[in-house]
Image (cartoon, rainbow, N blue to C red; front, side):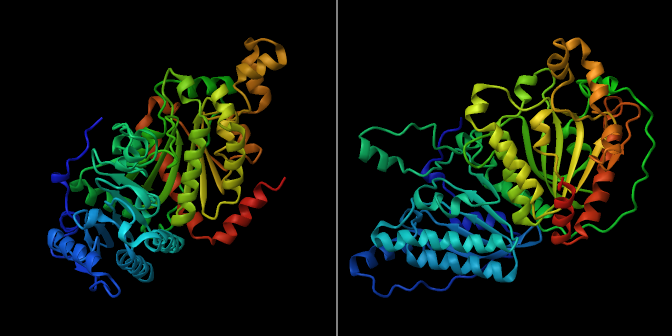
Length: 498
């Protein structure tokens, strides 16, 4: 794990902005702060902070172009009283957030701060709630809020506008967390562990989406906004639906389990662009069985959830409650950003373990189902391979469901169903046939809406198959985004209305 960034290596607020925006494009939004009512001792501290930092407050705001995209910016200056947020800084920040909201542009915030300004006490402390409210209003308009955490970001800043990003990345080695280490040492007379409040540790625990140096921020902002601010896709001709040959259910199941079969990662590699992987739940969990990303398919934007197969290690890929909570984060992003949601199902099932039970697995499946059925955004489910048990069902409800030819859906693996019914796993092929698990059976029952052919097996033509599936998905996304949210929600509720 990387060491913490030394204070002498901190990038200034203006230095960060200059490294992020297109040359010559930055325009400040700031006016001089109101210092009325400030006592002389505090006024002297403020004057010294101005001289030391070269700025008139701990936050500077403005707008600029990032790879040609207009973006509002707010950045802390740590050399101004440790980047602390007082009333003047808060009001400057709130004005910038409200202006970005009124003008309909995304906001990139880069805090570095010790938290609330102690010289201003409780009144300044309460300002954090006002900042959070302004950000909530910005996000409620479907506008992007992106965060770049710098060294250090702690206290009330981390517990408010530092933790509300749609996409959040941090500076390598930065100290990032709620509790200031000096406060901990003063209270408990011992040092706080150094490896806890680092960018890298937060990433490992699913609290942030990445760890990047400042020079990489323009690229990640550009790619994220390419998805978030994309225009609705133009309609395209419906890809021809191929007739698929009759294949035995057990044959399809065996094909779906081939280690060479493409999963969600290869699907994105071959069929998508502007892919921004996101990480974890934002609440301290990261599940290797769940992939969350922003992506575009031939220009059509979406939030994508995908169950990740690790060939030869089913225990690892069995999805736990943390994976489902990450999925629900994706559902919230789709709703907040007004983007379509795509779920990709390919799982041997939900985790069967004491930890999963204690982590609330059943409740998370139920909440995923409820969230998907009532989602205020277009949705497409892609049944890519194995569709087993509650782990598959949790991501199934959608406006449209696409199935690969050899994908399948079953309450249990056929071996498990056979063991229940016949007390032996040897009747698994018979159970697969009897239960109607094949894509053809699902189409006939109205569970899926269309099948994408494999020639004869996606494992033998991974790139061509993924591109073919991507074209179908792009068509479905364009068709759905042309409809109102009210219509989409009504259609989905009708579909799952028994």
